[in-house]
Length: 123
Length: 422
Image (tube, rainbow over all chains, first blue to last red; front, side):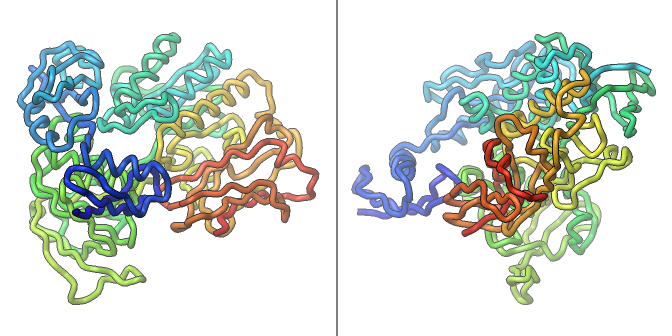
């Protein structure tokens, strides 16, 4: 049995949750003042995920393209995904929702553009 | 002199929503003026997710949220003139603007919507001693450099203040390869959302130093370090707790102020608590035909609330321009809205109960952290509305929607008071 403290992000209460882990399983969650806390604690302890947003270079201009993962990815893959995103370079035009990187770092999730870049000129 | 029915100043989320709403209300002569070369406002640089949960029921990034409104704006055939800076506004609703393309222009409008947003507090407002080297930026300015212009302000970063933009920038700078040493907050609690503390600091092992502040800034040309110290309950640095952090960048996330230079010159009454114009229940300022919404009215935390508020302002402006509706003439006695105990900056500041048709939204910030507290609205001495909240914090604006019949009760009163009772 191990214990872990996490802060619930479900609402501004920010409950301090004490999670008891038995191997890979969540045995108990203490400190939550609503159901969302227990659900969040389980997710966060077993498979924490995050949406990642970053920037991709655009050929011929300094201003970058903003991108996001189309779905949350495992938290431990955030930094390697950002590295892969930084290695990418796109050719304009790009439209919101266009896939910039397929299956980033084997997560099964695509990286998509979150802005339009019509020309290679800055701004 | 160009004449229009509704003139909107500012092309961020507030201005876009106001212009779209004015069109939907039937107005066909609308012009929007925007200082930047593109529409979208500050959302363009907010590339992180978390926008649109209320309005679209999905989580969008800032540019995506903005783009939906820019698209609707263009789809309706609305006109915006970008690269145009409004330099003056008069109480007769005459506007002077300058732009590289058109030079000096004059506009006259039947109704004006102010949607200029807000600006960041700078180092000057903090009175931090020490040298004045380069490398000290408001967090939002750094956000613009990184996200829009592709420039990195520095490599070793300290963040002063724990507002949401500072927290978001802690994560952005880390992901772009910088080392963020600490986020330093003078208050004993973060002024940002819990979610941002967890996902922008905790996720990356960045310490949040509560009850700490910067007491000295080092470096002649370029920032070389910041001395921080713990503070007591009166926010005075405690001698002996100083330590120096070596850094080349200091980002300030210490508050936002509505940007009202042109409003002041037009004779608009500004509220000392919100920093924005005082408005009535139709979001009209003390100058007839001039309306205000979004961060120029009071600084919001959620763009979704800006959209809702600005849609109302745009609609009211269109009605005023058409010369009808209750906007120009209150249909009865005006109630003054007061900040009661625990509430600060309640907007609107006055209400004509007789013309409120469905409900009256009231927004304010709590003065501290309250748990299991009631927001109470009193008409004179009579409690007409009560709503329980599990938690209220100064970092999150409270919005309560009071049904119209509650404020139309036959009570002899001249004031509506909003307070927090715990």
